[in-house]
Length: 111
DNA sequence: CGGCTGACGTAAC
DNA sequence: TGTTACGCCAGCC
Image (cartoon, rainbow, N blue to C red; front, side):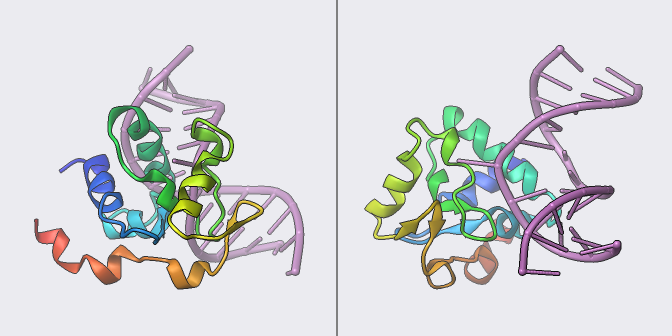
């Protein structure tokens, strides 16, 4: 399975109203230092695949990739539509809604 | 083939 | 505590 296929598989499994980080995804797919590549994978994915990339933010819960969506606030709008509160490009209660694939998809690696 | 870039993360200063 | 530096890896010159 390709690097990006793994990324897509994980991102698509992010529960509604939850978010995860580039680093967590990278770590989960076996490349803990390749978080940048995860971002790149999501970047190309937005025109090759349909995945909830808006549910992926950086480690601080900041919407660093919002300017890669159509509207400047599209990413934030999508998240708020899921009940996630955003303030100044930053997710509120991030530690609460953070969804770590490493803690929820242990069986995924064997697929 | 080498250097630059980037939706990141961590360590060092 | 705020910046800077660097590793990472795929794409694009």
